[in-house]
Structures are given as C-alpha cells and as structure tokens.
Length: 247
Image: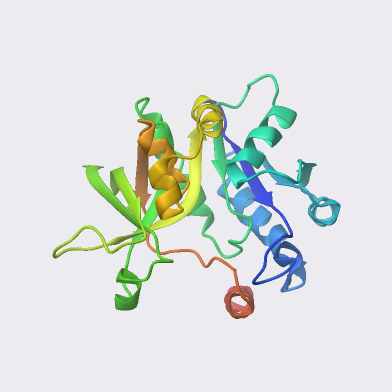
C-alpha cells in the first residue's frame, strides 16, 4: 500500500448541535481536535473536506489543510470521493481513511489500526468495532452492531451490520465504530452504487457495500470514541480533553 490519505468530512448542517464542527473545546474548534488526533496517528497526510468556508479557515488557522466540496452531497463518502479527486488526481494514494469530524477524543492508535486489514488484498474496506459493555446498549437501535466471523485474533470479517440486537444467544455483542479505511478503487465503486434495499431499511450506508459483494473487515479496539451529537456530548468531550491536559 502507498501512504494512506486521511480525509475528515465536516459540515455545519446538524440539527441537534448546530455548527458543531466549530464548537469550542479547550480553546479550539472541535474539527481542529479531530484533525490533531488524525495527525497524531501518523499514517499519512490529513485533509478536512467541507462545504463551509469558516471550517476551512479554522483548520488553516491551526496549520492544517482543508478543501471545499459541493454542498449537495448525500453522504460523507460522496464528499470524500470529490475531495480525493481534487487532492490527488494522479492517484498516488491507494488507501483513503475516513475519520468522522465529530470524534474529538478518538485515540490516534485506533485510526492507525483501521488500516491494518487492507494488507490483505481480499479486503476492500476496513473499519473498527468494540465489545459492548453497557447492558442498555445491547438493545439500543442507535448503537449499531457488527456481526462478524473471526479471521484472526482481534479481526473479524463483517457479515452484517444492524440496529437490532444481534447475533442471538450468549456471547459478546460488538458496537460498530463508523471509521473506514477504503481501497481507492473500493471507494470509487461504492459511491457509484445506488442505495441498496438493506441500506435503506436499516439506514446503514455500509450495507450497500456488503450487498454488492464487497468485503469489510473490522479490527476490535478497546473502547468506542465519543461521538459529539448533542450539547451533553459536547460537555463530556470538554471534560475528557480537559482531564487529558491535566495528566
């Protein structure tokens, strides 16, 4: 593999927490914290892709790179595909890592871990998961479960993703973490596919890839990073990063 390119899609249109990429956390916008975590992963260049000039300005003020993309993309993966062609039209990078712009506390090691399954040429897309430890999350539809088959210690081949409680029976359940590492050709194929029936039913974009016969492998990590979607989440993120600064 050539050096991966890390892309962070970010937009201001959030209903539960308006303008959340620019929300202040410990003196810096949230998107800048995500950019810093991705830089700390040390796996390749990091670029924020957005439809908002204010996000570009915030990232560049922190010393980062950002590009403008169209405002009408239906998903973050579509925004990634446009940004990829603008940043790397020669195709130097054959791996694209998609880090969500609302994960300011993510462990940089987890970002780096997501790339590892792509050393296997049979894998199209790599992602992350963690064992569910809170009982209420086993039945919570907002907690997406990964159903997979172990192919190596700490690595699974994804068979399905669901908002239901699955698989049935005794044993651990796995919380899917929405961070992806794509082979470039897999990303190009994925965004060219129409939404699939199971994707529309479960409202889970990754099912489009599985229904098209693409292989997704997942690395098991220690915990789920905090996704900031509400004012309460924002306060938790502020507390976590403040504690890190003190330690």
